[in-house]
Length: 348
Image (cartoon, rainbow, N blue to C red; front, top):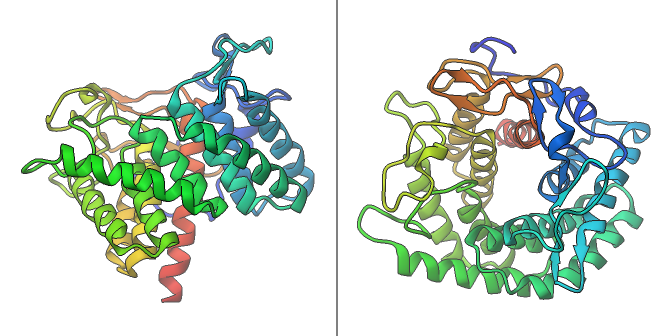
């Protein structure tokens, strides 16, 4: 990977990392170093992320883009189980589903990818497919209880223009803040977990869509709180470590730090900038994005802009040298979001 001084990647990372991990079935979950690990097969979580990425890789020619977007859309579509009202998550390398329904969080992420498809896909046929399947799945998904699943559904709903879904879950998340917050803890739960910034981001996106300043205010307050928790004393980004998951009202552990936390922070800061026009949120996003390039507790670069690769996180002894789908996709999506923010900042 490149050295810590490399903070300004090209507008689009290389696409080779995606092609390394994906085949005609979908994108595989894990790698051992740079070699895909078929023992862990595929999951809808990662294929939903990959589907969203394809809509945002506007640099790719149709000859590259179209076959891959079809693979990832097909995986998400096959994952939908109308009898259960949820998406299946895990599939073996041989192509057999390993469950009839996945977690609420994985189902919420799949719904999000459909909303993004309805709004962002290149062609009208794929946008229509995404919109139709989103509407079919959205009603049953109202039964989810996980705060992150709610946030993922809201992000899909705001992309697809479904105000009813966005408002229902926005009310639920707002109630969680009012019941779980206490002095020094302005958050939706008594614990910190993964993809934390998606919760305030969802409220910000819903507030923008619905023109609800009260939702925007809660989103900004909670995002400012978690952003402070993710700032090291030296000022660099410090993702909430996985060792702190499930520890009630505790300070975040330093390790292991995961790429999707930096990605979620960049994209939540983009939502905050859209809501406020405050360039301070762009500065926060840059700090989070610089984590990929070595501005982190280890001083080690985790990504390679030329290939689009990303290591699986930061441990007490350095980078986790595996390069799985979640990490690669987190880096690539963060890079595109950061490029868009830099463009907005330059235009201001």
